[in-house]
Length: 181
Image (cartoon, rainbow, N blue to C red; front, top):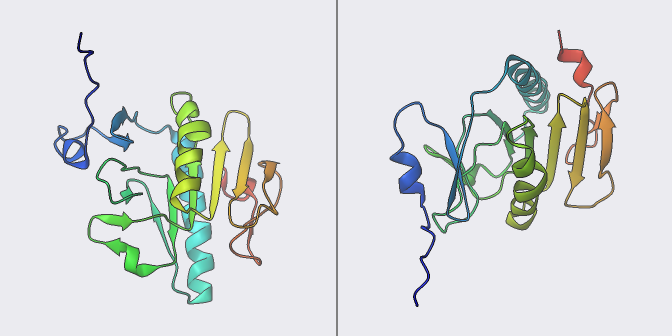
């Protein structure tokens, strides 16, 4: 007896989705994405502004991108994600379609429908792909879980009122309450 095989999707399937449908592709499985909430957008915009201002002041090589921004984690055609915030320091990874390879720092803002992805599947994928730092921001609990994959020194749990140190930048810390209305 032959068992039915699950279909393996590719990036071409993501691009073939009807206009307005957003999805991510992890190991050949498609995960639909709901529109973000107002609170989500407020937090994402605050991060983008804070990080971009910091990077402009440093005149460095790193760039920050807010979703929707395509990240092709592997060159296998089966992994495509749209992190809420991506910081990329190797500009050779950036092309017209997005980022090919792992960003240096990724921030995901959790919604009720993305918790399993953000805390489980993406945590594993980002770590194994070579992301140096990963933040999971949970607006409903007002917590931030920081993973310092590069050194493991600052991995920990923070609350929105904390001044959270950025692992890849020793002179940057972020207090989320600074940009919430």
